[in-house]
Image (cartoon, rainbow, N blue to C red; front, side):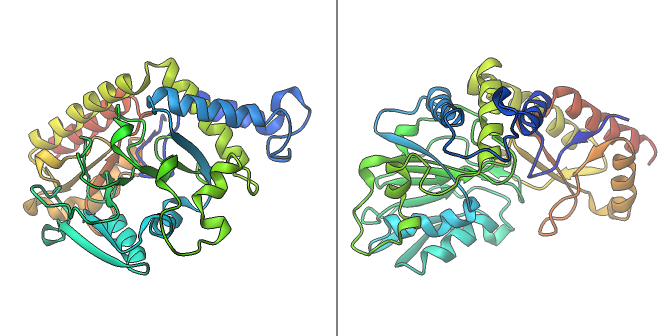
Length: 355
């Protein structure tokens, strides 16, 4: 039976990216050595990093004056590195979910944090609007997509202060105006690569403006000056990122990825809204195109385990919702096919017909 991977992350990757990475793990660049055992300073690995950086900049149309870094530690380490490098006196944060809350918590260790708005009052089911960003903040931090609650900021914000974004789960799903951001970061295990890689897009002249001393490893300038080679980087995940960047470019870039994301969302949300059994959890104007969350209506709550078992038996993988929301979650990243979304819809319709 064919399986459809709706896991929230680590998540689906294009089959060819998996196969190319697997082949390199057996024999990298016809060297007779595995990608897993070569030196990160090997002459034939540096071109991998260089091409990955170049494709990052090309696909996202990143302006001059920005660096792309490949680090470890996940977005969770960036929650600390961002304020370490940017927070002098005060930072502003938009709280739209668990990960935004965790980022905010780390920033409070370094200075004053102003929460400009929060959607916690309704269990993070919407993106706040009409908030005011303090003009004297050192930066404004947002989390663009919320994997748990299924909400997303899909337009680049105009900020009066440096804008910093955690884009772990929607990077490469749409075109970006990178010039509006001072720093964009994320874990790569959603739309970019296998787990173990963290990407950072950073405006070079934004650094060096805090008065505190920064530990070498946590200073972005260290990694810029060493081309992400200050210490051993995650070699295999960087290679898988390169394969996926090639895939994205070959399939029309972020413009094409955005079009597919909308098509997938239209299919799945259309069924959620039509089906008598289900209802979406996020407010319609805040719905994510990456993580589509839904629950059984109150009168059908007793069918929770039955539907999960039925969907699993039909080849749906990873659709159980996060415990904070319950219900179900269909994560539709770039590599998810229209066929996979239609298969989920068919499953929902068949289950409805039984009840």
